[in-house]
Length: 393
Image (cartoon, rainbow, N blue to C red; front, side, top):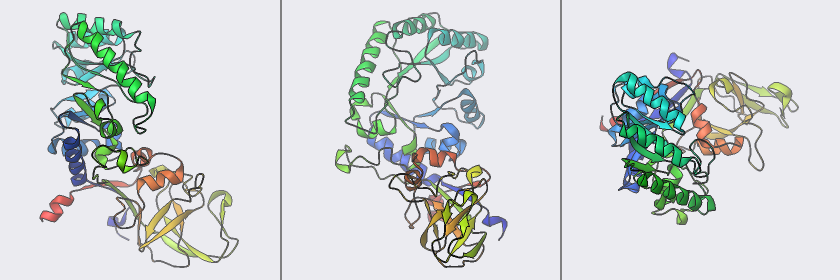
């Protein structure tokens, strides 16, 4: 094996561009924000942001000011929103960088005002209303006070209220009553803000699932996170219930590694810690040099409910994970084959070559594909490729 055979997380930036274009076309005339928080959902924040901008995304979205400043340092100059600040955090750097920040309370508005005065430039502020997710944002009864404090600061010249927004709790279930209820609360909050004199540039409620399944929730802007990476935000919704049909998204991530070794097992031989899997026949197993230290779920071999163990693709066949995933490695059942070291193993990818998808891994592990892709990397090297450039070459 050579250095080129190391475990890799391969991200196709052409897939990201494709997804952004498809989503922008679907949600028009609403503008689009590509969410690149958490290191681009594990895909590489800076690289994904550049690909999304190249594909025409109007906004970028991140959780923290630190993430926003990384994007600015990398040269991004377009509209950019962050929404998760810490109590008492100095917001002067993001205000100076022209980043939109979010306030949930008058206390946070005061912090933004201090940052604006420290930098000598008006801040760009968005207000978040809690329409029913009961996470971040001002509850409806606290909303008028937040609006009043922001309007007073805007009138004083300390800031510009550029947006009003909220977040859906059950967007992947289009018939869930929370969706209509939240949209009603959001519209009422917009009326309060308008009556107070606020005229934001954008009003946004829909995430990826909301953007695709609830056209009435698109308003001026939608925030597409997981869909931008080619992962269906509502895979259990029948195609007939997706307005306009399910978009042709392309998963951007492939996780692969070389087989380190293979060996024979006898009936009764146990595998990995605790011998949670014991061979019921003579078979062979292979060792893959990735583990939970690299984002592979520890219980991938257990299966959850009716689901079976997670699988990988080796030598053209799906092979189940056997025994507990360790920090650095896991074992797969090779069903009698003794394959040579260096044989490629694909944990997940688009599924076009027979490999498992992130959704299949998620279902085997009792989680969501968002978590699967976001946690993948650890010590594996991340490689960005561009399949469009390869085709052109």
